[in-house]
Length: 241
Picture (spheres, rainbow, N blue to C red):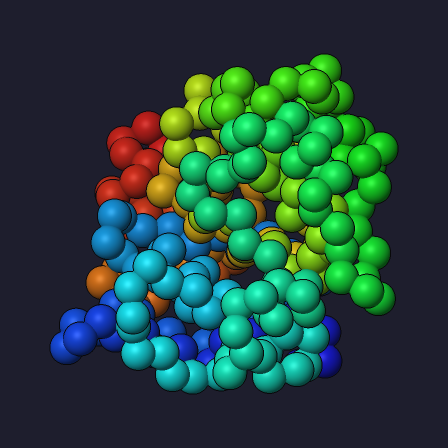
């Protein structure tokens, strides 16, 4: 469909003889926040890494990845980033020796792409303005996550991939970060959110995809998925049930 920003078809990832991901189809549209949930080892990080063409190992990857209608599956990671596919990895990595200001200044959009300005970033994350001259290594976990997302926005994403942004954060900060992501989506940026904290994710996403052992076990609008017995039993518990 013409309104699809990011699309994967028949995406298969294997390490040696072990199948890590077998994804028939996934699409992300403007102004849409899609949550990918599942237990540890379900293939969530494998999915976002495969979309970006990056891995710590040497997997065999096949299938199609298209960004804004262009096939990018054969491109190296840096070229996918240049075209506007951005990933914020787990843990919100930033340059620890650089200040917040220097971290943001080091992120510059490729020619022809408009990145978020510093003023726009500070509007989303006021705390970063307060910590402007602090080193990345001196930030809290939540502040590092904010800075990592802000850096990606400075690069002018067409689509944003977030891998476990809530890990290590206090519940209040989880809510703050995810509400801010929702603001980005409502402004038109499509986001794929990989999250183990299903309770938090379910409050902000539009669609939910449940992965198990590298395969889609269930998917659909969040209003329907939050009542799925598999989601309730494994992630939400008796309170929601």
